[in-house]
Length: 137
Image (cartoon, rainbow, N blue to C red; front, side):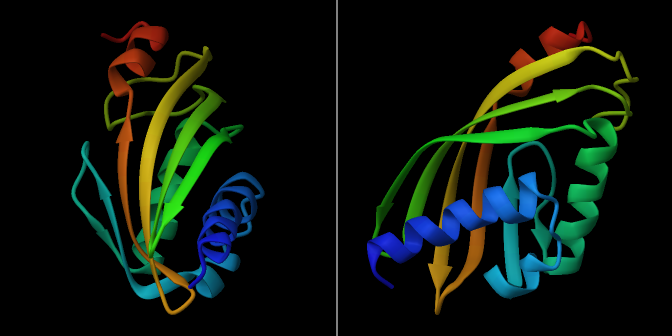
């Protein structure tokens, strides 16, 4: 995969799948054995489990949007710096009750690609900053 293809696949993940909520595109861009590593929860394995995770995230923040600030690619990996925004309208992290507050938090993802598909994502989010904004710290 050329670096430009790696960047385009990363952008497609955020714009089409996450922001546009076109979950069908996940079948095109994720490997069937995709693994999502997020520090705040157990790994999500497979496309269907990832769809379920996205459902929980958008229940908590139904208008959630992700702004890609930077994409840096080398070889089969892309590092993506993000700003995430949304209104807290549902239960978050299993026990943070809805506040209705607008929040904005940052994140860094590393995506690994193979044969034109994303095979893994490692995510770090500023959950402390998010929970502080929600008044739930």
